[in-house]
Amino acid sequence: MMLKDSKIYVAGHRGMVGSAIVRELKRQGYTNIITRTHQELDLINQQAVNDFFAAERPEYVFLAAAKVGGIIANSTALADFMYDNMMLEMNVIHAAWKNGCKKLEFLGSSCIYPRMAPQPMPESCLLTSELEKTNEAYALAKISGLKYCEYLNRQYGTDYISVMPTNLYGPNDNYHPEHSHVLPALIRRFHEAKESGVESVTCWGDGSPFREFLYVDDLANLCVFLMNNYSGSETVNAGTGKELTIKELTELVAETVGYEGEIKWDTSRPNGTPRKLLDVSKATKLGWTYQTELADGIRLAYEDFLSNPLRAER
Image 1 (tube, helix red, strand yellow):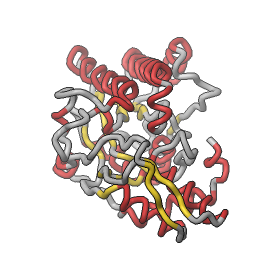
Image 2: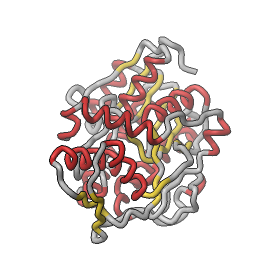
Image 3: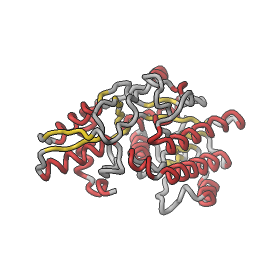
Image 4: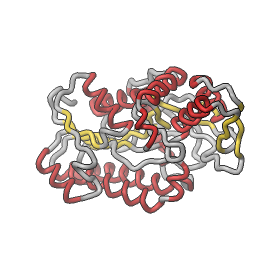
């Protein structure tokens, strides 16, 4: 259990997840939070990470740093995604262990589960069949981080846990039209379409895949909850347990943004995984459920987009 003055390091505090964790920790009264920007500490540089941990010796670590992106980025920069993510997570987890960190929480992604996993996906389906090819490199890196935590627990008796979130959205998201995930990309595209008065917007695929979305502040609340209430090598799914089609999502975003033109579908573009819904019964049994409904969350995300113009240029 973290004390209010425990030394807590949040890796990736400028990203969507890391910034939400810092907000949640502060909201709950934690006062000794340490962070470093990428310029101050390159997590891919092993010596720099080792020096940082030796000097600061954080008691608790939230590992929310990662190199992320949508379908295009994941399928064209395969080697970069694998190397950067593998290096930074191994460096941080190893240095935490070497320097006596009491507990570490590793943030993964639901893309670690097999492409044709049973739906909804339980934590136990990990590594039971092949991955979705469009983000295999990122998934393999995340699986490696999860497994390294598990192996440290087994070999050295550490208390390192992992969380696997579904699709996330909310404040500090990346709204780049091609390098972002589906929901923020839609927010930007419909906003720009509304502003420029275009008659139609073309979206990727046919709109048939099912997706689940979790507001990032809800995830942060779960992350702090698990750090204080969960120990175990099996990961914990983070989601709502509710799904909708990309077509339904697209219509909801268009409505929220106020775009009234036509929505078209480019079926030559990839759909990605046909269905992705997490089995969240484990988190529920631990005593946690999400708070923010999708329509409310999209409204908040759109407000964030409008108030953070620089976010749209990443």
